[in-house]
Amino acid sequence: MKKLKFERYRIDNLSFKQNNQSQDNNNINVAMASNVEQINDNSAIVSLICHLNSEDEKFELSLQISGDFVVEEDEKEENIHGVTNEILFNRNSLSILFPYLRSAVSQVTSIGYQEPIILPPINILDFIKKSE
Image (tube, rainbow, N blue to C red):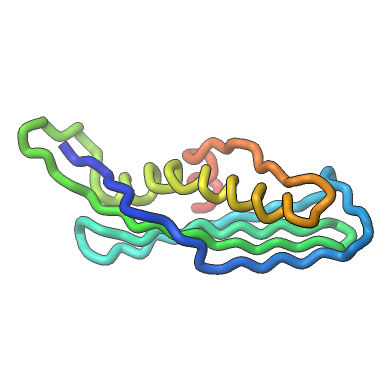
């Protein structure tokens, strides 16, 4: 059976700008993207990119987080039909990385910002479909 192993994550890029005037968390635009760079058949670097900005242009946050993933085979267990390394990298890895992205956004915006921004949970499969 194929198993996705999450080795580590890192923040590749972080940019945070804000005006000292108060901001309204209800007028924050969020844009997200992902990238899968397959190193070889069994390993990949997966990135999530998030950009947040206020409509009044007084707040902007850009964040890119990446994770290292490896697919391991357990030959004692039978593979699930249709599960490929590509599916594991493109779907499951994003589900694993997203909570780290949410946490980083909350932590950064809690420092010197009026209220921390807490991104809502998302349906990763819908995100992937919309990205395609």
